[in-house]
Amino acid sequence: MKSYIDGLLLNLKRANPGQEVFIQASTEILYSLIPLLKRDERYVKNKILERILAPERTMMFRVVYMSDGGEPCVHTGYRIEFNSALGPYKGGLRFHPSVNLGVLKFLGFEQIFKNSLTGLNIGGAKGGANFDTKGKSDGEIMRFCQAFMLELHRLISSNTDVPAGDIGVGGREIGYMYGAYKKLTRRFDGALTGKGLSWGGSLARTEATGYGSVYFANEMLATRGDSLHGKICTISGAGNVAIYTAEKLYQMQAKPVTVSDSTGFIYDAEGIDVALLKKLKEQLRVGLCEYIKERPNAKFIPVSAYPAGRNGVWSVPCDAAFPSATQNELNLQDVKTLYANGCRMVCEGANMPSTLEAIDFMLAQKDFLFGPAKAANAGGVATSGLEMAQNAQMASWSFEEVDSKLREIMRHIFRTSYETSKEFGAEGNLVLGSNIAGFRRVADAMLDQGLV
Ligand code: GLU
Image (tube, rainbow, N blue to C red; front, side):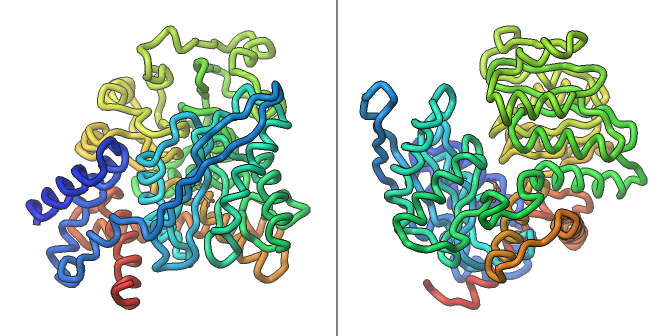
C-alpha cells in the first residue's frame, strides 16, 4: 500500500510542478489513510484517491481595478471547486500576495476533509487573489472586490458554491463583494458567508474559528483529566482567528501572552489585552508595535530580531501553543524549542501551520497533545454552515444558540477523530483519526454517486 501512495505522490509532483504546499497537504493525508485503504479495498479499486486529488473544476481569471492614483492594477483571481460529494462547494477566499494556484489547491484540498468532519452537507473549495489589502485605501479595496466579483458571480449561489473569508478577507471585503454580487445577479441569497449581521450574517461567525479551536483544545485536555484552567498560552497571528482564540482562552481561565503580525510579535506577560488588540486590528488596522504605547509593560519584538521567515513567538515558554497565522509557521526546530520550554499541547488555528517534520515530532511525544488544523479550526466553516442554514429558513438564531451548536460540532469532531484513531489502533493520534474520518465520509458519498 505504501508503494501505491509513493507512486500517487510521484505522479502528483510531476503533474503539479511548483505546488509544494499542495504536495505537502496531500502527503500528510495520503499516508495516514493506509490503514483504511488496507481494510476496505473499494477505495483503491474505484480510484477514489486519484479522483479526490483532482479538483472538479479550477477557475483562474484576470482582475483589474484602478488605484487611487489612476493606475490600472492587474491581479489573478481563482476559485477552485474541489469536491462536491457532500454538498455545495464551501470555503474561503484569501487575498494575499503569496496566493498562487498551489497555495489555493492545498487549502481547497484540506477544506474537503475539514468540511466533512463538521458533519454538515458542505463540499470543499477555496479561492482568492494575489492581492495585498495592506496599505490600500477603502476605495481601492471596494473596487478590487467589485472587479473580483465581476467574474466570481457566475460561479456562486446559495446552493452551488458559497465562498467566505480567509486571510485578507473579513467583514469589509465580504460586504463589498456581496454588494457587487447582488447588483450583478439580482439575487439576495446566501451566496457568501461572513455577511453583516443586518443583511443575513450569523451571530458568532466572527468568533467561531478562534472559539472552536479553544473548545477543541479543551476536549483534548479532558482526555488527560486536564483543562485550560491556569494555562499560559502562546498565539501566533493577530487576525480574526488569533483575536477570538485569545478571547475564549480568558473565558476558560487560561492566559494568552503573545500575538504576532508581519512586523513582529507582542509578549505581554500580564496577558494580551484583547480589547486593545481588537481596536488595533479590527478598527485602526495598524501594526502591533502600537500595542506597547498603551501597554508599556509588554514587549514588542520586531521580525528583524529573529531569523527571516520564522516566528519568534515559539521561543516564549508556555503550556500550550495556538499557531493561528499561516501555513508552515511551525517547523521542527520550533516544536523542539516549545517542548524543551515545557509546552505540551499545540492546537492549530491556522491552515497547515506545522511542517510534516514538526507533526512527526509532536506525534512521537507520548506526553504531548496535537490538534490538527482540519479538526481544530473547523469551527469557522461549521458556523458558515449554520449561517447557510439560517439564510435558507430566513431566520436569525441568537448568539447563545449558534455558540452552543458550534461547541457541539467541535465536540463531535473531536469524538469522531478520537474514536477513529482508536478504531485503527492509534489511540489519540488525531492526524490519523481526523484524516480517516474526514476522508471516509466523502469517499463513501463518492462511491454512492458513481463516476462523475
Ligand atoms: N477560511 C475558513 C477556513 O479555512 C472559513 C471558510 C468558510 O467559512 O467557508 O475554513
